[in-house]
Amino acid sequence: MRIPLLVLTCGLLATRAGAQEMRGTVVDQASGLPVAAATVTLVAANERGHAQALTDSAGAFALEAGDAGSFLLRVQALGYRSLATKRVDVGYGELVVVTLTLAVEAVPLEPLLVKARSHPPNPYLASSGFYERRRLGGGAFLTREEIMRNRPDQLSDVIRAIPGVRAAAAGLPGRRSWSLNSRQGTRCQPTLVLDGLPTLVGGQVPLRSRDNPLDEAVSPRDIEGLEVYLGPAGVPTVFNVTNAACGAIVVWTRRK
Image 1 (cartoon, rainbow, N blue to C red):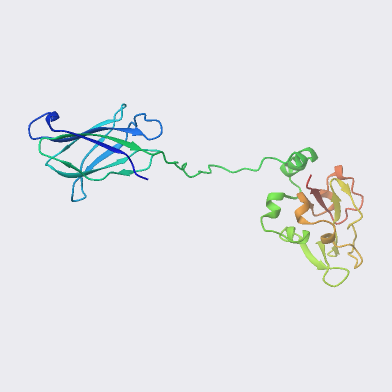
Image 2 (image 1 turned 120 degrees about the vertical axis):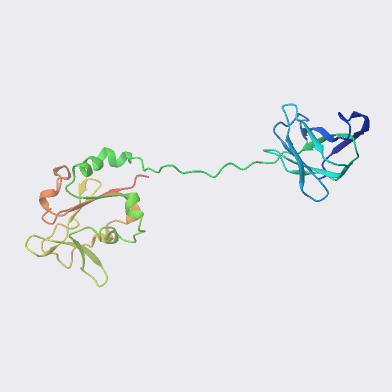
């Protein structure tokens, strides 16, 4: 795009003998309004900046060349495309007055700086007493964010690292059930409590091959919160579990 450049040569306008000057104004191409705080650089034939000035509130600037010659102007302003004009000859003692127009350019915002991250309490977990029980302790507690951090495929993958919990084969080949170490040293399966209600899954001592593996009861993708209690004494009475000889796994499912 060609940038308009109006050049008026007025040799008699020089302010002092022997001085060569270029004065002018910088305006917005669309509105015609002056552009303040624009940097205007007078560049000599050797491509080095010869003089530099900032436009004032009226968009005006004045630059003095040390010698006569051929010069171009470079203009930069925030929010505008940079401009480099064609060369203009300035004779000895000559004042050249110009008008420069700048085209608006979209200015990208500064990169987003993340100062902090947090996960607000889930309303469903809060109403179920999850956070209060976690505060009091007595079990292992995992939120959805913590559960999905390792991208588990099955419930057994989620509780694999909880101390005192171990995986054991049960039922058909390849089906995994979770067992805990009972006080008698036998393997047993904790009772599954789903959304606050005890189920018929687990709760057996010792573990039987026909017991339903917990992996088939719920998918990690459907879990909002998880509580694991490793013995009957630690299971909160609010869950009304009667067969908690091996503890309980409490699953809170995601709300749609």
